[in-house]
Image 1 (cartoon, helix red, strand yellow):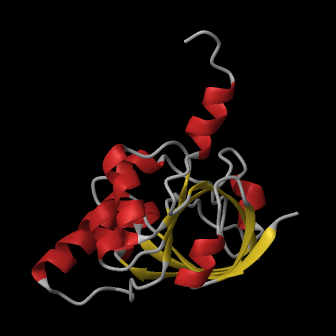
Image 2 (cartoon, rainbow, N blue to C red; image 1 turned 90 degrees about the vertical axis):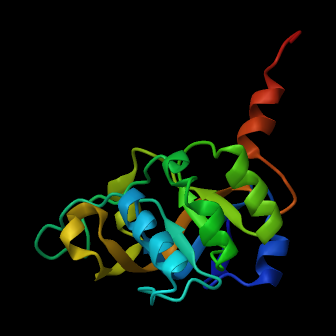
Length: 184
């Protein structure tokens, strides 16, 4: 049975999340990809204003497609998370507590999750049309000129994810792979 988590994430909620937990997220998440991440980190380094308050927020690594008439958003599937790992430790240091994407994370990102008490959730790749049904509102809040890589604010309801990396060093991908190693 999935757990329901209301956003933004709190330290108490994060402490209760364990690798393998199925979660339904409710509240606000921010969608950003490579170029938006780079701009946010550059703004942080220069001490410039940010497009949103990072503390306790969750970022979804997503490349949306245009919405059809009457829809909030088009397909909204996850993109490969490792591409954001060059920026993720700095964003966690600034307050990001949750990240959503697909695929494994690099060791620096995993180390930062433990250090800054952040979690990584996976959304199922290839299910962007279904995931989009959980997005009740979408608006561009920065970097509109980037098109599909613009920074979005998404209001979500029962957004399905799985905890891959928790604050205790758990890693669902590594744990599951280890179950199938024979004589290695």
